[in-house]
Length: 492
Image 1 (spheres, one colour):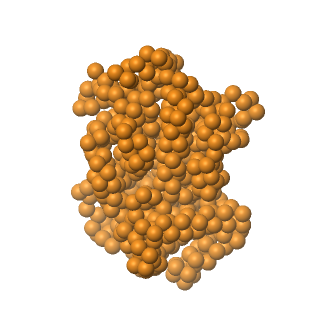
Image 2 (spheres, rainbow, N blue to C red):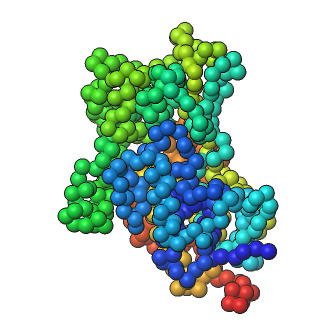
Image 3 (cartoon, one colour):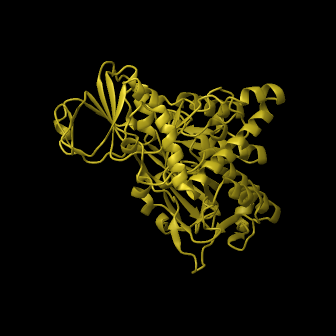
């Protein structure tokens, strides 16, 4: 037996709960379910439990457009973000529509039946759902494994080795020597969070990352809220931060030398006098070629100034019994080594897809407007921005999907499908980002194209115009009526 709904949302993280809200607001008469592999809502914010886990974007833009973020912290703790997502789900009445502990394995489209059949596992048993539309809100992280390079001699190390994705809740690092391998957002978050209890924390990096301090609290929003009300203040502050992030990104891309110099000057002011900024905070790449790391109130720099933390820029030769031997010959002693070495990516949550019995090779698919795939009918997916808040794109995906379904309803269509048959369109990476975790997985992801609508949007403002205002029936999106027997079944 299968349970049938109009829309099946996969994932109860920030994307899935946002999609549920937009769907319910636009189509209160339509049935939908959310399948969630975990036992709680929150997605990424329920998975990661390492010390200091927090947003890497401000919450005025990472928060939902329809639900003001009211906490005074705009760089928020992971637990608070998860609670915000859960409160949104509870207030929206979505808990009755979430099926927890359901891992999606595969999905099959049938043209004859004009629907998807989705196979999942729950409590070790197979379960099946059918739906006219599927919305994949799984993000692109692989939840069951992180990325750890092969380190020579790691079995000789007598201490603990921990990956942040699987942080032990009972870990006691009080008075311990800690080495954190990595220089991305995870490492930069963990360093100051562990520094207060540990004897000393060393961040070991092969190469630096751009780091900028940001006030943890918005100095203007609370006053605006008192004067013009919470909802209006939230909208204005959200747009202010959107425009500011676009300005910073464009400045970094168009004037990289000037941006690099400005960031270096800010870092120098935060760090101790005479600190070797050019070795430890001067990346090989230009600003925003990879995601910039934000530190609230300069907490990383404060830990370095106070002598609780330090940065070593070198390459690992091998692990030893007592720690890590570097290529330079130096040995870092450690009781605990944290491998903040990255994530593994997984498109569409790893589910296998087929259309009319033919398996779909995602790597050969083209992404239409970065939210649908050529050859996949009645399916959308959410992948957020790499240079801005994830939720900004998630909201726009829902906006477009709603416009699309309304167009279908108005014209009696039962199926949509983006078709890429233009030989002049050449493939380009869907995730146009130089970060290592992206480059390791880029070959298994769908492709973007060299021109619209297969080309990635240039910015949030571009996508606002494209996804909220562009023509739905553009000649590339193909529509068809539902089979007569499918209509009769639906009517009964």
